[in-house]
Length: 88
Image (tube, rainbow, N blue to C red):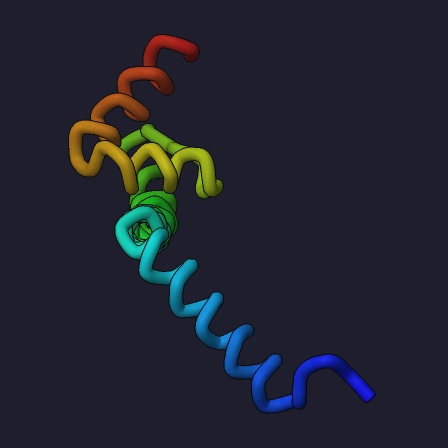
């Protein structure tokens, strides 16, 4: 027989999970926001790769470029284009 009944152990686990979520609410929200913005950046890179060959400018569709776009937005896109131009 265990020291605590099953419902007490589950109750403590749920209470601890709620406490952890409350403590890390802001960092988790910022991480989720960054992931969403990076996903949108990845989609923008995929769209740009479809029409980029017409202008002669191509960017790789990868998570590093998407993360730059997620963090910096439109200026990040300009930074990626500038880096592509300088490294060519």
